[in-house]
Image (cartoon, rainbow, N blue to C red):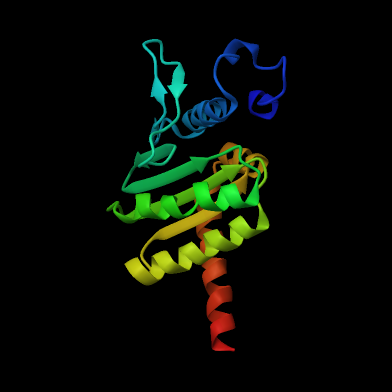
Length: 180
């Protein structure tokens, strides 16, 4: 409910001094902790005060939230940006730079936004291909999610399988298109 209320005046009044994008990072970090905190370390990269309240966004050279454990690394970028150009320029390519230098058995990457523009999906898919070309097929999976999709996948605890399925199906479609 709090995630759905971000940006609505008079809602989430207990966090009225925290700007909306930071609230989004904060709430999604709590959601991840609730559903994955027993099995993984949830590491939001926003800055906090002495009471654990968020005060500043994640710095520029890292993703917003990292999930780590059991040989697995999951990088999550969250944004309230709805504009196509801003989503593409500010929230996509840098994710691949952040994850490419990580050495883990399994790597996952997600972009989460209230609305994901169609061009952002296409660009994200192109970056998946580029990553695989550059680093090898390996165990890399990625997917863009709307906020509602992300919450649903987290609650069902099916997000890792969903990202694997999406990436595998995308690779199959691409190979089929290249072979025709």
